[in-house]
Amino acid sequence: MKNAKLPFDKQADAICIAIGKMQPGIVKQTLPLKEDILIDFDADKKIIGIEILNASKNLPESRLKVLEAIA
Image (cartoon, rainbow, N blue to C red; front, side, top):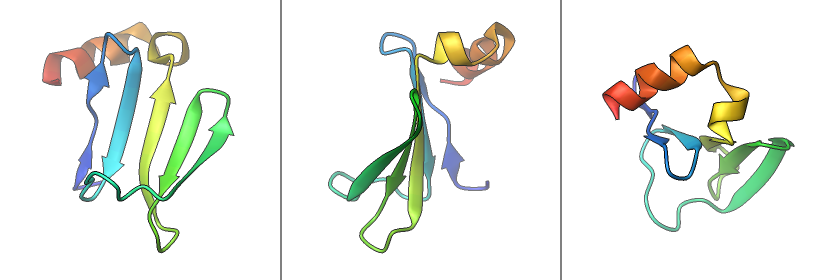
């Protein structure tokens, strides 16, 4: 994913994977894939983002450290 961004918000314990350009108001629908994984869609019903909530519970600690280092 060339244009994907993976910011980890340690305080919110969440990761938002933005696919392409994320702008305020572009998300038109959010659907849960699982309890802590949400998929964001634009007006054309294209996936533009994936949110992982409770990241420290859902991802291995080694991966979170890598994401923290590049944030």
